[in-house]
Length: 141
Image 1 (tube, helix red, strand yellow):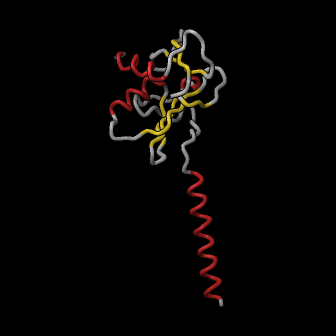
Image 2 (tube, rainbow, N blue to C red):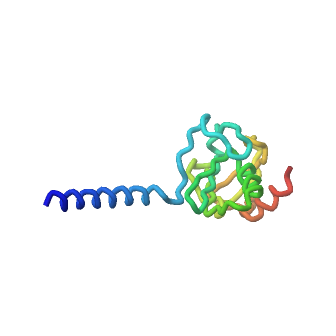
Image 3 (cartoon, rainbow, N blue to C red):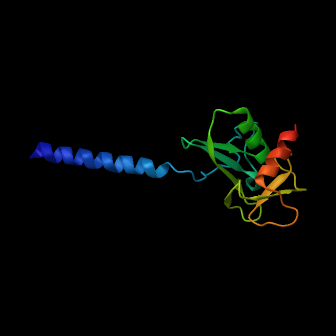
């Protein structure tokens, strides 16, 4: 009887452990520790949250960047990594948004690596798409 009870608790423990592991594996943005986390591309500390960017691959690995330009240039160099989510901070609200659905603007505010773009939930006549942004940033060196 004790042996069966022991097996039951072991199985229960494994189920809860597996369940908690699965819950942490998602494609949501992770917390950035500003002035401590570093950009995957340029290796500078991520200090200005208005321009923070995260890419998440199919294995749930999160790559953090200080500027969208760093993220896209890094991705261009890392063909083998399959990115499934692109996140960026909304310039106006400080919320994470899907970078591929964001509206992008050329900004006069200095960006961490001087790529000069910011993202927003809101569209206007000056906004461009993520695809357009990607094409523009490929021409910037």
